[in-house]
Image (tube, rainbow, N blue to C red; front, top):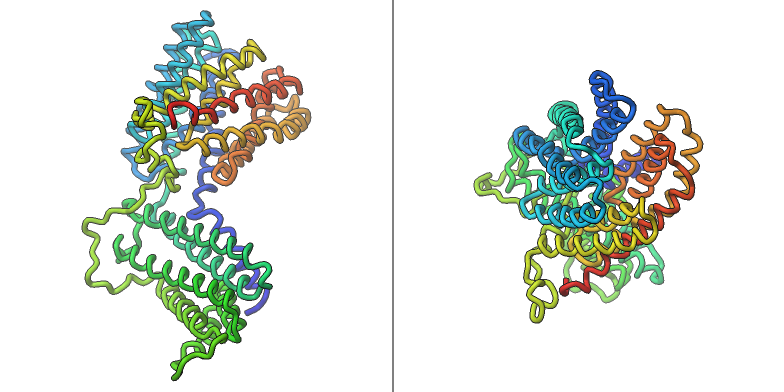
Length: 539
């Protein structure tokens, strides 16, 4: 095969395999389009209703927040589930705003209710994924109203801006941003193939490497096998979406075909490890087979594998590596055979799509993470503390309330005006996490992302100062890149959020390097409180 073609195929495999179903890219583009267009819609709405400069800015900020959360909450494939979810956006944020209006101007009461709102926002997550966003909206509504000092007379205008953003994001999610499940499933299957070939390439590298590098290359091989398993689970989840399966396929049939391919690649990797450890004269031939498979040169795989598959009499001589090489060749040929018929439904007469139950339910097109199973794991300390026997969401709600209280106390010692950054860091640390280690890592990443983002934020704020159009471009671009990288690195997400915050304060004429440094200090204080959750009630 031409080296240029092989290189292009390798690049395509890496791109496709890095983002199964292009889910991260779709999320980033959806968020960018939703936020950018909502900014324009809210500006036109505020102008038409003569909201004034401050009212226009508030409407645009509130609409952008709603667009950001709505683009994530409405990322499914069903029409009516999206409608049912979106209908409760305004009531959720309205509840928070009403609570914020009730305590505006009374600092001590506002802080007490702030902690209560954080408890409720986490507690309601027990009712499903939609309530994850409802809880966040309740918290955000309270934050907007309380810290803006909103009056009851302002609520209709604020809720109107929320309603406009909700309607627009719902319309986008049902039209231009609607996910095509069949196309997505096809892309995830392509990612599975790309990751399978990555396992083959890692096997070839292991077979061809010096023994002193074997330990590191084995770790790389195992990591790529894990990524292959993730892609397989995503196929399992997407295959349950209505209209996702190709014509003529059933869920169980796709599952069996997927299992056969997965087992073939795992067998190839296991044989490569054994052969690399034992050595033998057939090791170079096995490395070529794995290399051809990794480069998608399927004809060459069968040609090189044929001699290793020919039956031989007698016992293999010690040190030849005949049997591991034979197993590797057989696994490679089996995978090539399956890949050649990947688009044709398998002739399994005993398989129907009755009672098909996927082993995993996806969350926003991705694997659900530890939160999906953590509720079934008993918390520590159950023998001495009855609070550890509460449900996961209740424990987390109590923990976030305690963390928020500590963040308020510490944050106010640093700044009486900006302590909410510490509270935000504490609250966000509990979003999407279910274990102490996850929360701690997320908290540390938030501080690191903020620290690294300071320099970029300050530099870009000076470049875009006075140019509103460029400010908006940087804000939308930053959030899009943040969404694209959030599942890769939370620190990268916060890096771009810090840039976005710098631009917002530039628009509000409050930007300064000292302000961003204060944000870093408050964030560090807030991030320091959630990792202590392991000391609370043995969780």
